[in-house]
Image (cartoon, helix red, strand yellow):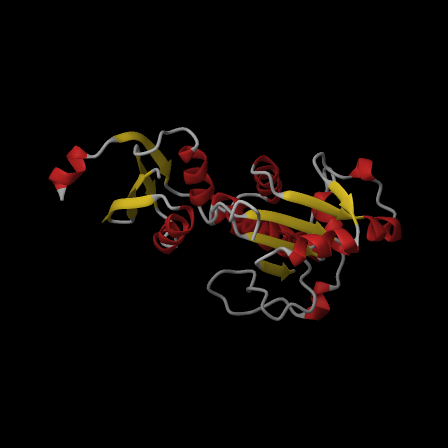
Length: 163
Length: 82
């Protein structure tokens, strides 16, 4: 717990596909709305979530739970077709249209809300070096830190999650 | 029940109809910043998950849901700021 008695949550975001971007952003912003303190540590592919003007995709390959493309017709896209050029764009477009249909906020809007609500957003320096990501490529309001930064935050946290 | 509502100090209405998780919770949080302690906001939502979400949010934040009703698909929560 923090000194003011509020609960703390810290989340590791290590994946950069569109579907994996949602849980950390939703949970962190909601946590602040519930009077908790929230932080997200973006590492490896998760850095893509906080890149400026970065479009995220969802892959149709190897996702057994991917819903069939035509509603009401229980036939999924075979993996062999998923490897064709353009299929990732198609799968991404489909997911975005489902999300829009369910009135789910966009990734960019959720990011904006996290920053507005004061979620502490930390980019992992080591993986930025590995992936060749410069701080200027990240959106404004991101801190930079390493494993010790995360562990210091996590040691005080009541909830720690990784995506 | 109706009489009780008439007596309530509802100072603001918040329309969260059509919004999905977590937007209603983020919106009620922002609205709390705009009203005074003891004042009540009437929030409307259509997300069925908001029934449990609002109860959990109120429990965590100490704000009170003094009344709630369902009219078809629309849930109305009367939230009193702590």
